[in-house]
Length: 106
Image (cartoon, rainbow, N blue to C red):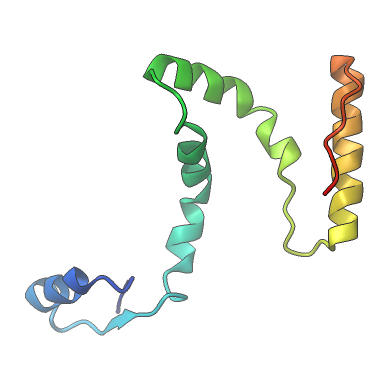
């Protein structure tokens, strides 16, 4: 079975290369592959504002240690629980860095 997204060019490639395989193109079928690339996509998004590759690499290597601390997994967390968790995490950061700034609440 061949699972692809909905690009028309995939259908042409399927007919030419793997005509005997079953071809399915649905937006939810390819999530396993897409989710494995999610950390890479997040790092790419963070590099958009940088002008040089060297500065980008320095920033990413420094921020990759702290970035997961401020992005908790939310798939089973309520909004209230998320706010409480983030308040706790920012409090920990403030203790370590000696700052008193807190994020503004919406």
